[in-house]
Amino acid sequence: MTTTHSRVLRADLLSFEGDPGEDDIPAEGSVRHIRDGALWIEEGRIRAVDDHARLAPELPEGIEVIDHRGKLIMPGFIDSHVHYVQLEIMASYGRQLLDWLNDYAFPEECRFAAPEHAEAQSNAFLDEMLRVGTTTAQVFCSSHPASVDAFVSASHRRDLRMLAGKVLMDRHVPEPLCDDIRGGIRDTERLIGDWHGEGRLGYSLTPRFAPTSSRAQLDATGGLMRNDPGLWLQTHLAETPSELDWVAELFPGSRDYLAVYEQSGLVGPRSTFAHGIHLDQQMRGRLAERGANLAFCPSSNLFLGSGRFDRLAAREAGLTITYASDVGGGTDLSGLATLKAAYQVGQLCGQPLTAWQGFYGLTLGNARALSLDDRIGRLAPGLDADFVVLDPAATPLLARRTARSRSLGETLFALMILGDDRSVAETWANGRCQHRRTG
Ligand code: GUN
Ligand code: ZN
Image (cartoon, rainbow, N blue to C red; front, side, top):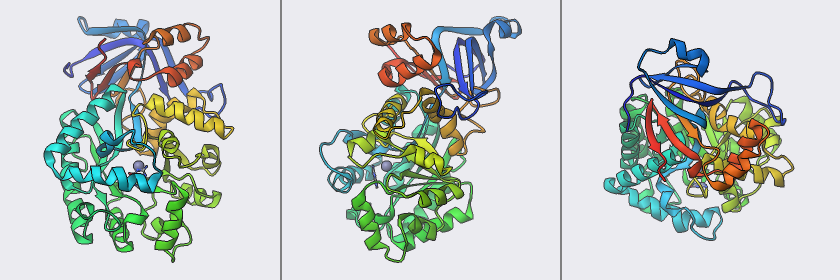
């Protein structure tokens, strides 16, 4: 749409400087809110963030000023765990995890052997992400290297900051998805060489979960991680009770599910474990000690009936939580929908999520947990110009509700409960408007 030269957006600005805590009132210094602010961007970066009145005299004559007064600009949303290859099996009826994988996910992923299919799905997925204000995600591809090439090429063409990887699986899956150990590792090494650190891309090692990898494959993945500590790692952990039983059967030498990953050296500060619902406090403590994070995927947990995630128990253990859609198990790509589901799950656990904690999570919280906060997650000079323009009056109902808000906290809460893709007026990435809502 628009090019990357210097321009200013005038709107309310909201960015987190730190964790706001769990109270209704955010911790001192954790929130930066500028009413009638100016966001000056140049060559894909943020150049300045200030009151419009204060910045205006410093702006070069004739610079384009985009007037978004009445709207709220926040850093682009981050999704810490999502499967692009499952876009079209969202909303597949009526199964818990292991049946759902066999009935829907694996057959669908077989289709990604075809590069044309992978390319079409990559573009459809990125269009949908941008429509809901998500500018960065950590993404599962399929077992096929071509599925990674297609996804990261499409992301690269749009200058998006993305983490992605080829799924590693060498057992208990249909033959077309099954790696031989050496081949899977060789493909992974090739993909790392081609894409890790290329433009805004990072490679995430992706053993699917313990039941679909042999010990040898997990060990080989741990070897890649040891060789390059700059790589990310994504997998699943303790999502459902039947999965736990299966893992105990498959790995009798491991004292629990987490130990299976520990023994292969897969638990580190760049490791994201999706779900982690069925863990005890001691396991949460072990994850925290290594600086790993759990991806809380509330809409998926509700859809697949996987269980209630105990967010505060993780917090108590010092374990970092990220927020994720987990599409296609998840029912919505929107970060707003993820926060709504997180609030609902929280209510069932007697731990309702504040809007402050939720929006911190979608932005700076996820960026920090993924070690991306030197580039994204805040509106601050020098950081990448990835942001979302939210319209708190996007629909007649939202307009009615937010007109009655007595505080920013109330408006944010209304957005996370009533908002959807219609609340996203624009999504900018690398200094370019890449989605504009029409109609
Ligand atoms: N566990 C292993 N694979 C998957 C997957 O594709 N989705 C979810 N929700 N859980 C998994
Ligand atoms: Zn998942």
